Length: 298
Image (cartoon, rainbow, N blue to C red):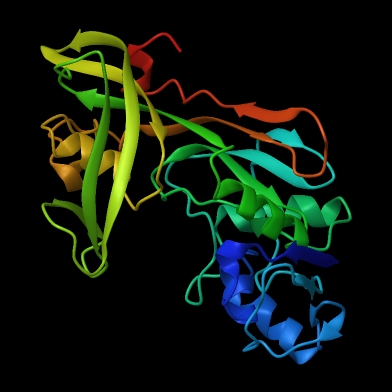
């Protein structure tokens, strides 16, 4: 498959390798294979990855589909949407999305790969990510080229992602827009709100609104709908916890209410289909009917 990209003024001066990694969203492995097989072209001619680009240059990248480096594992899988480019599934809470070097089995991707392989597909690529404890809508691409196309789309403003969360307590307002500076400690796998910009600190922006509130065993709980404008590690969890209303079940960020996992759910996603001139893909999934979700009518 061939990816094509016309260099705009904002990318002029970038190297071919930099453009492939950022604008085209190629993985390190995809870029390495393209280099090895002379699949990097600028204006129709083979080019080195270090070549600087000019506005108007046509970049072409040949992608070779290779099967995943992890085994297929048939398992429970709820399909929410499927077409020739992508697959959207309902990810259960507590399930890891993708294998790692130390763990090649038991993940959602193993199940998806088994399903796609049985249907005749050659590839399986996670387009976005969800934390282990977050459930809901997840999108997979059937090819490397499709994944690159979808990831470029997901980096823009045309994709709308919606989450549901149950927080302990009641927000002081019915809705809000929060902007924070977040720093993630990889050693502790914990994110913190900080006061000033420094190395490793990233801006985080989310909008939220109250859906409903209930009291259970003397404890107030509030169901909120959240829309992310940035996708930082543990963003929703830490932004609410830093304001004294942690997600139910989120012991890492201070919740005293016990639940199997933090009450966070990717409830919906909507975006224009990259291969179709009209029409959008809209996928929704409801959280499971377990505590604390069962306190609300969903």
